[in-house]
Image (tube, rainbow, N blue to C red; front, side):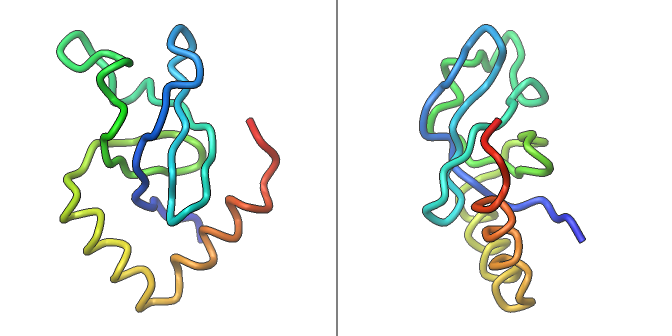
Length: 93
């Protein structure tokens, strides 16, 4: 199963292509942030945002508390580790 997992945007990798680096429990990966940017929240303002990451895309912004609770729940269910390992093993974008 492929779940969305919370991560924090730590850098913009390529603003024109809407690509950012996200940190998910210490694993950093390049993702597409096109779904979460708009005129009121441009690419450059995304650094520091918590997002729900699914198959290489930031699907939505979430707050830090929601991210923490989601990671705790996924850990309890044993799903977080599987998703983190999948990110480590996948080829960089």
